[in-house]
Amino acid sequence: MQTYGNPDVTYGWWAGNSMVTNKSGRFISSHAAHTGLICFAAGANTIFELARYDPSVPMGHQGMVTIPHLASIGIGFDEAGVWTGAGVVTIGILHLIFSMVYGAGGLLHAVLFDEDMQQSEVIQATKFKLEWDNPDNQTFILGHHLIFFGVACIWFVEWARIHGIYDPAIGAVRQVEYNLDISRIWAHQLDFIAIDNLEDVMGGHAFLAFFEIGGGAFHIATKQIGEYTEFKGKGLLSAEAILSFSLAGIGWMAIIAAFWCATNTTVYPVEWYGEPLAFKFSTAPYWVDTVNNLPDTAPFGATSRKWLVNIHYGIGFFNIQGHLWHALRAMGFDFKRVYEAARNGGPDVRVSLNPE
Image (tube, rainbow, N blue to C red; front, side, top):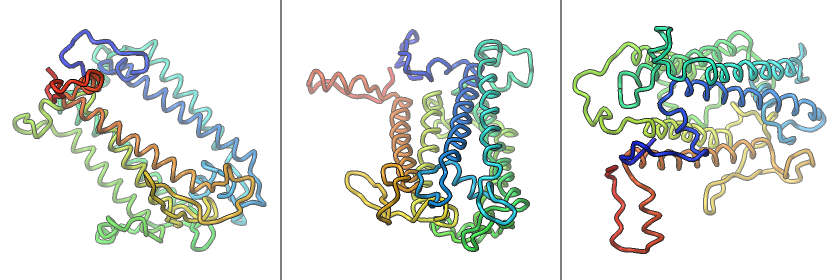
C-alpha cells in the first residue's frame, strides 16, 4: 500500500488490504475465506430461489439469478427435456459444503499456517512469496492464475460437448461441439454481443483455454529478459499497482457482461432471464425492461435480465473508479493534498505525482 515515504504509516480497520499486503500466508487466507463467502451466497441463494420458484410464471419474471444460470448450462431438466429443477438442490448443498471447506482453509492459513510463505518449511510454497516490485515473482504467480482460468474454460467446453447445454434456438438441451475457427473467432472481436450460435461460443472458450494455459506456462517458465526498465514496471510495480490492475480487469469484465446480457438471447435465453432490454442514458447508462405488466413475482417490477445487467454495470463502473484511484496512488498521487487544497482554499497547495 502507498505510504508516501512514511515507513510507520498505519491504516484504519476499513483498509483490509493493508493487513495482508506483505504477508503471503494471510493473503491466501483472505482469498480462501472470500471464496467461501461467495460459495455460501451462491448455494444459499440457489436453494432459496428454488423454494420460491413458481412453474406457472416465466423464470425471468421471478427475479431469479442463480437457477437461470444453472438452466442455461443444462442443469435442472428431466428426461423429457422439461425444466423441473432436478439436481438443483444438490448443486446448492454442494456449494454450502464447499463454502465450509474454503472457510476452514481460510482459518487454517490465518491461525495455524505461516503468515508469510517465505517462512514455510514446504519448499514449493516458498515460491509463492509476495515481492510486489519483483517482476519474476509476479509473473510466476500470474502464470498459475492463467492456467487455472484455462482449465476452467476446458471444463466448460467439455461439459457442453459431453453433457450438453440449453440451446434457445430449439428450446432444449443439446451437446455442443466447439467451432475452433480462428478467423471466425477473430471476426467476433467487435461483434461478440451478436453471436447467435453455441458452437461459436464454445469455440471462443476453447481458444481462451489454449491461450490462457499457453500464457500461464510462458509466465511460469520465463524470467525477466534484459534490464528491468520503467517500460517493464520499474518504479511502478507495487501492491497498490497490482490491485489497480486487478480492479481494472474485474470492472471491464463486468461492463462487458452487462452489455452482453442486455441484448444477447443465445447465451442469456429469454426463457430464463426475460426479454431483451432497452438502453437508456441520463447521467449514466442504464437498461430498462421492454415488457409491461410484469407479475408480482418480479421484484420491484424488474426481470432477472434487468437486475443482472444494471448491477453488473454498476459494480463494473465502481471497480473502474477503484482502479483509477489505486493506479494514481501507485504513481505517487497524494489524495490528501486534494483534501487540504479544498479545505484551505489556498492557490499555493500543489498536487504532485512525486511520492516523496
